[in-house]
Structure formats: structure tokens, C-alpha cells
Amino acid sequence: METAVEQNVSEQQPIAVKGGIVAYLQVDGAMKAVEVYGKALGAELAGTHPPDEQGRTMHVHLYINGSSLMLSDPYPDYGYPLEKPQAFTVMLPVEGIDFWWKRAVDAGFTVVTDLQVMFWGDRYGQLRDPFGILWAMNEPAGK
Image 1 (tube, helix red, strand yellow):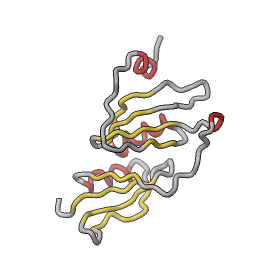
Image 2 (cartoon, rainbow, N blue to C red; image 1 turned 90 degrees about the vertical axis):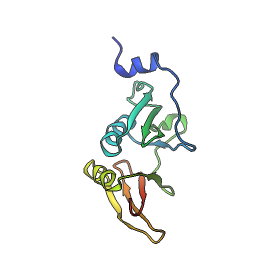
Image 3 (tube, one colour; image 1 turned 45 degrees about the horizontal axis):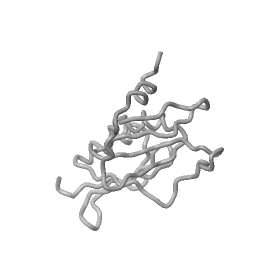
Image 4 (tube, rainbow, N blue to C red; image 1 turned 45 degrees about the vertical axis):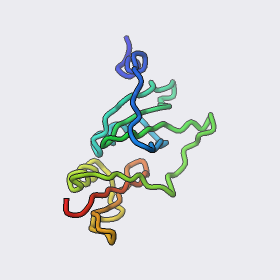
């Protein structure tokens, strides 16, 4: 009997990639990230490959706020070791930033920069997810 993930892959239709540029994140626990991002960011699973015999997932495709985000577990035996996320931030422009912010914090994201009106006039803040990824949320002030 096929699992839902195996069925998804075996019957998979082409998945639309949404967005002009797409982040592809490597996290320790790609399928766990699906759960966390679902709770924190309203992520929808677009498709995934089944886990290998070690429980690693080589590809996950999510939709978040009208865009695609892709994930994988590390594969050090193939030259892709897990490295600490650094020198980048995933920007998430949203409408209704208070809702998005609270949902992410309630789901385990930690505040790095408080949500505030910035010098450029938008409401902005930064959060770190449980996998170490830095997320910034932004909404034009007055919305």
C-alpha cells in the first residue's frame, strides 16, 4: 500500500513554480519544516519526494503567500553537508502583518528584530525559525 507521499510522487503532475525567484533551503528535517511552516506561515505542500532509507527528503515544494519555497535535507554523503544558515534573509512581504507575525511567533519562530515602522516607512520585523533560517516580514505602513 502506498503512503500519501509515495502516491503524490507516483501520480504527480507538473507542479507550478510560483515567483520570479525561489529560495531553496537546506534544513535538518525537511518534512518537519513542512509542519512548522504550515503552522507558522500557512504553507501548503505542493509536492515532495518520499524519504530515503535514512529518513531524508531530497525535495519538498511548498507554496507560501503565493510563492514557491523549496526544501531538502542535507546529504553530506553526496557533498551537501548541513551548514549553519548565514548571510541571507528570506523576505516575506505580506498583507495583515500582525496576523502573520503572531502566527509565526505562536508556532515557534523567535523575534530577532521587533515589528516596527522603519525609516523607509514600512512595518518590518525579523524572526528566526526553529531551523535557524532568518525571515523578514514587511508590509507598507497604514495597511
